[in-house]
Image 1 (cartoon, rainbow, N blue to C red):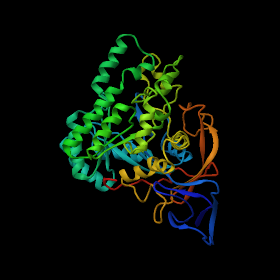
Image 2 (cartoon, helix red, strand yellow):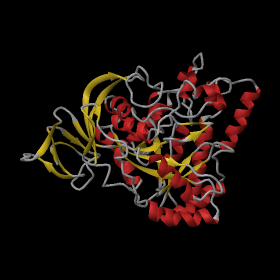
Image 3 (cartoon, helix red, strand yellow):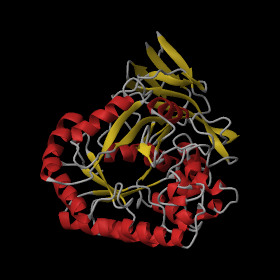
Image 4 (cartoon, rainbow, N blue to C red):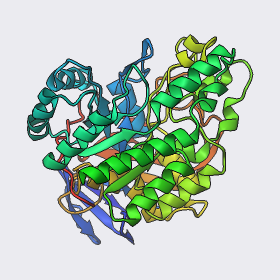
Length: 461
């Protein structure tokens, strides 16, 4: 059945205009005025923005970490994403040394199968760069459409890879058209500082931040960029949190290198002071990189506005405060790293960004959807509203003022890091490939309706 979205303001990364949108099947088939609408279901978008569905390029659903597993699986996580205006996620497939890449990918397919309510794809972690892994990458990219590879520079003795692994991955990525991602913190330095803090009896959550200083993020970012330049490859720095890392990315982009960066809503709206609370409350805000001093926020907003950073991912990695974060009550190193962030990404970006004049409405769409589609091989099928594109569409009322709370969110988590924050903007309805997932603020989707996304190889946006 056709659907006719009428009366709204269409907003893309490039344009803002009054128009109706006609959907047939899974795609947009017409944009304009004075449709007959005959035989079409009418959707009134009066007073609302009609946006491309958000693309979250950074999620961790059903992921084992620190002796536990993230609290959102592929159903609860993608349901919450949809309520927040996101219609596609790219999750991280973890691998193990000595294990084939295909084995790890099969595990992640099984996690998502029959559960995802919206479309999803995978990034692939590279734990080692031996001949077998480097050879296997070509078939993985061709048959699975996994065209982004993540290397951890932190979490020593868990995820951390050495510089040789990173460099070999960058060289191979250049050959195969993949985009390499890095978690950029100097894991060796962090390991030393962490052990020192514990030896001195410092166990509170705030020491998670004190032992992961911004200089360690800046250094690792600069090192990864230097190796990328040496390999003549392409790099995407995930969850940039501080001015030190932004500076290195800016310098590299001024030289014309293929360096891209992502930040997250938590770094734009929260700062390190919230971690220094009594009764272990600071554990709610333990993730990596940690929250920074408040002045870094305006540096990050400016970097988004000026194109130094291209995307905003959630880094959704949720653990309950009760029973999961509490694992580290007597030792901050045992607090599972991560927070529940998938649902409030667009709300924070619109309210603190567009409403406050830090970014334009078109930039809001660009950093929450379009640039991710372009960088990760989904554009123009995803990331815009255009004839022939998937009908991934969000009807968003910009006038509604509301308060974020764990009492009303849809993530499977017992707290919200933005608890009590007043924001403007509310997602009214969400369509994924032409079908409602959220309608009039009610979930009407189904587990398993999300399609797996095979993505194109890297092309400079």
